[in-house]
Length: 489
Image (cartoon, rainbow, N blue to C red; front, side, top):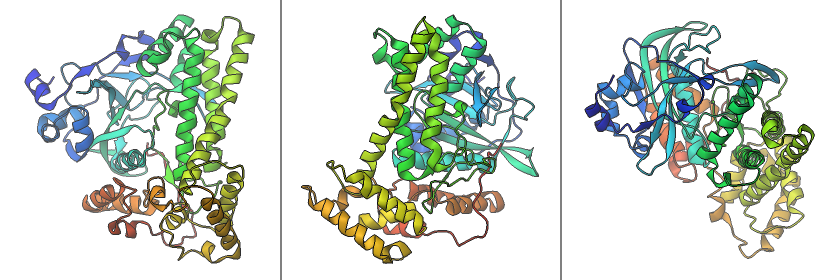
C-alpha cells in the first residue's frame, strides 16, 4: 500500500461506486506485480485535469502505482464482468487483462475510471496471460489522444509503463501497462451479461446506476429505462457520425466495445483511412469486412438493438409493448446518425445553411474520391486551403464540374468564402498509419521516443494548418500489400 502522504502528494482522490453494485458485476482482483517498471510516457495535461501531480507520478511511488505494484490506499481494485457479441456471436467475456483501480474525482467534481490495462490475469482471462506488449499500448496512447484532439468522444491514456518483463506472443516482446481513463467502462456487453445471467432486480440496479452516473437528467422521467435507451442511441449516433467524418475505422465493433457513455473504446486494430473507400478494412481478423468503414453505422444500429433487447424487462412488463417501444427507439438511430453526419459534411464543405441538393453534392464528391482513389483527409484539406494540386482527382473534368456546382452552392449563403471556418472541422493531419508505425518502430527497435514525441505534438492540434504539419500529410509509399492491423493481445 502507498501511505497517505504519498497519495496526497500525487493527488489520488479515489471513490469506488461501481464496487457497491452486487458482486456478480465484478471480481475483486489485484494487479499482478511486475519486475522492473519504468515510465515510458506520461500525459501531463490529462494528469493535471484529473487533479494529479505529473512530477509526483514520475517518481518511484507514482510509477509503482501505474505498474500495479502498489495500490493507493483508497483504491478497490476489481475486474469487471461483461459479455458481448463478437463478430455476431454471443460469449462470456470480462476484463481479462485489466484492473479498475477506482474512480478519480477531479477538482471539478468529475468522475473518471482509472484502469490498468495489461496488469495481469483475472478470473475473466479465458486462458490468456493478462499481459500487454509495448507497441500496442503506445499505439492506443497515440490514437486515443489524437481522437481527443479531433473532438471525438474517447477514452484517454494517462500513461504507459514498461514492466521489465517479456511477454510471449509470436516472439518474446517487452511488456507494458497502459493507464486508461474513461467516463466509465460500462458497455452494451455489461447489460447483456446481466440480462443473460443475472436477475431482473440486478438489471434494474445496473440501469439505475448507469442513469445516475451518465444520464441524471432522465431520473425523474416516467419511463426512465426507455429514456436510457434513447439517450444512448443519441450519443452513439453522434459518435459514429464523428468517426465517419474523420475517416476512422474502429476495426472491432463488438458489443463489448460499445460504451454506454458514448466514448470510443478499445484501440486494438483501429486505423485511419487514407484513400476513400467505404469497403476499407484494416483488422487482420475481419476477413469478411463486417466492420468495414462503410458498415460502421449499420453495426452500431445492430449493437444498439442488442442493448435494447437487454433492457426489455425494464422498458415494460408486457414484452410485446416493450419490443414495440424498443424497436421504435432503435429505428430512430439512422435518422439521428444521418442528420449528424450530413451536418458535419456540410461544415466540411463550408456550407452553413440547408438545401435539398446538398446531399447529392456531397455524395457526388465522395463518389469521385472513390473513383479516383483520392485521399479522404487531404481532399478536404485541399478544399479548405483552396489549393487543388497533386491529386489525380483535381485534374478531371468531372471534378471541375463538381467544383463549379460547389462554388454556386457557396454563393447562395451569406458566408460565401468559408475557408477559415472549414479549418475548424477539416483536420490538416490525422495519425497516418505509416507515421504511427514509424514512431512505434523507433521505440521498439531503437528505444527512441523522440519520433513519437514529435508525432504526438503534431497530432495535438490537428486544425493548426502549420508548416510543421506539412510533412505529416504525405501518403505512404505504394505497397502491393494492404495495411493490416492486429488486436495486440
